[in-house]
Image 1 (tube, rainbow, N blue to C red):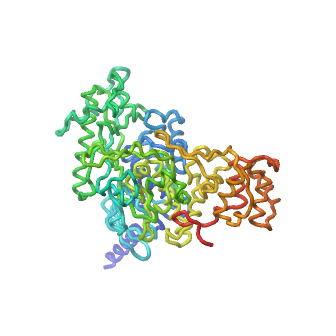
Image 2: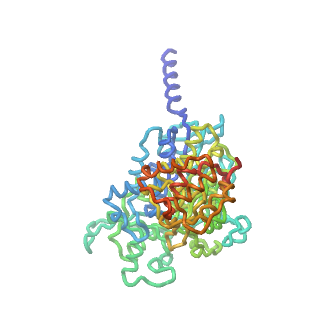
Image 3: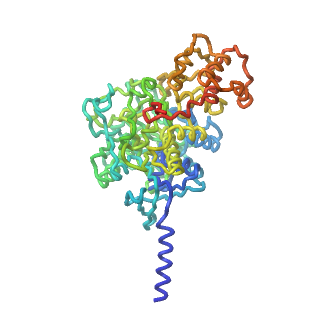
Length: 617
């Protein structure tokens, strides 16, 4: 009996310490959003655990093999900027990453995983890889999650739960309301939306990575390793237009197909096979499938990609391109398919195309927490039943994502951090891209950490506090391409831009949309006054001309708002900014005016709601 007692006691101690983990923030999904959220929340002092079903971090960036970054090349915001810099350090500079024409930043998935694992090796962050959640319960004003790892069962208790899964798996489990598939015109008010809603999601893709094993024109590898077998379902007609432009114009000669392959050329002579035009996109009606049915259909998607690679190797003659042993899988496929769409939470706000096209007609931009510049891009070629929407002609400038889209409308202590945010189906075509999701994850981690620190539900946290914390982490909250993180006025311009006091100018531009702040332009007295009236209503009585703002005028404006303010204090800021004090009558540019507004008036401390409206004092 004594031996049995000690065995039982030892068992209970192991069970308690290993199986009964307690953290502040639990993240399900170690993809782009989940990894970013975990890193950020841990850096801010929260105890965090990530539960990830694969052996890698990064999701679509790595485990799904989509290692060509779409967008945000000139907005290296926060963790996205850190990740890119580490890639540059690894490969030897920016040019070493510009190997394919689809992106400025291409890398090997295995390298991306290694970098993310290193970034995530920090205090307060526990990562359970190869771990699958089995049960989720709302309990004790928080959450209890059971999961299996290496044949053992564990559980974690946390106050905040973050859904960072690739397809919004947790939303129905926790009882959060969500949207799925194409929204109707009536639901969104979007002119481009179909008349009737449906459950159709974007085509997914099972990516493969190929590597060039040739030396010159000869094949170095004489064996058949890396040559794929012809699938039983193979039909060469499915891939016949792969080397043509969408309008049917040929690239010309053999180079047409080489250009198709160069789309996703990676460092070290590897190729990402993620080609939409008669390539390996595949429609999977997963919203109407069980888990087992989806798993079975994914095998068909793999076979379709295998067929495309067979076509490349045999019909096009690129037998020098062999399947790379890039992933820790028996078949050398990625651990995950690339799902472009998820269940989308019904959040505190609902971001639609109108908000992106005309941000200043609304106030959501004031609550921004992540930025993007990629156009709205949808893949529906493989589903003939999908309503035709002219996505390519939906013109939006660069944009930001409102904080309220990360917070489900009703579910407490729950945040979303992936493609599952509260946006319309059409807007998802822009917000699904990797840098945006990294930014969304960083914001989710910030929100969670502040919520823990203040003992509040995420919905009760100050929007301005979240934004300020992101700015301290060198993240963008406004999509201004012409004021970089290195600029002394970066934070001030971001804050002033997010108040709407000085507005920027958005331009839809090809595959990298733009918003310009024009920091060198001058500001008229009238423009400044009109921008400030919402925050300081008494300015309505102050005279303002069309002349440029000077330091003298700015001082008068401050005295008009606060008659007792000692304007001499303003002179103390110039050394701090490393700027020579301008003459009193010299016209000031938008950069300098932003610095003055931020430091002296500090309108950013005035609280706003999720709609971007100023809260009553």
